[in-house]
Image (tube, rainbow, N blue to C red):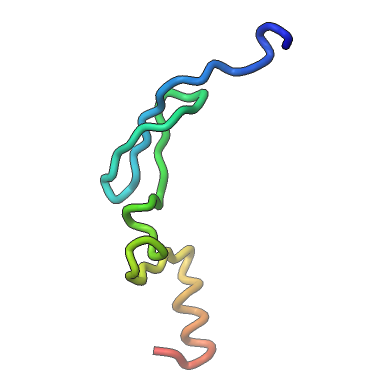
Length: 66
């Protein structure tokens, strides 16, 4: 393998918007994420809508959903 071609992997502190913190390996020291396994609907079983610019409300209004 060539020298200085691959990044240095280190322990990375990941912080989610829900407050969950954990460590992974990455080439960065810190990461900030919006959704993790502690707050994602697939893992929690609850519905949480991440709305970008009112698109969910616009869709519901268009199709008369409540």
